[in-house]
Length: 165
Image 1 (cartoon, helix red, strand yellow):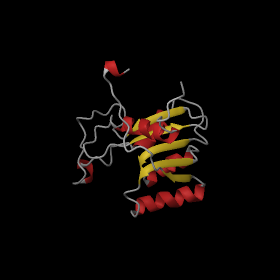
Image 2: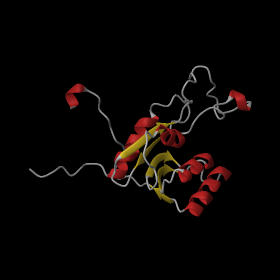
Image 3: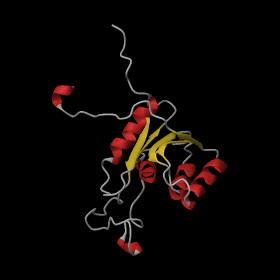
Image 4: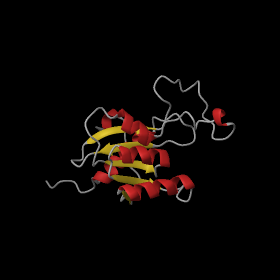
C-alpha cells in the first residue's frame, strides 16, 4: 500500500500549531498564536496573546479603545513574546517563528534579540502602520528572513471525537 498523499506540509503543520495555540487566548477581538521551530523541525516553544502569569484574566480590561489603562494594550503579552519567554531552555538562535499576524515592533526586537532568523506569517494586515514599518526595518537590518506563507489547504480540521482516531 503506498503512503497517503494528502498530508500537510511542515509549514502548514507549524502554522496549524500556532493557530491552535491562538485558541487559548482570552482576547475577545484578536487571537494570535506563535510556534518556534528549530532547523530539525522540532518545536522549541509555543505561545499566544494573553496576560502575564499571575494576572487574572477577569481582573484586567480587554477593550481596544478608551483611556490607556482601560484597554488591553498595556497588559497583554503578544504571542511571539510569550513563545520566547515560554521556551524551556537551550538556544533559539537560527530558529523560525510561525505566527498568523506579522509581528509588531516590540516583538520584532525580542525575535531579533534571541536569534530567530526567519518569521513565517499568514497576514500582514497592519503592513502600512508605523510599528510594522519599524519591524520590517529592524528585520532587514538584522538579516531576519520574512516569509509570507501561501497555504495549499484552505483549512485544517482537528476532530476531537474519540471514534475519529
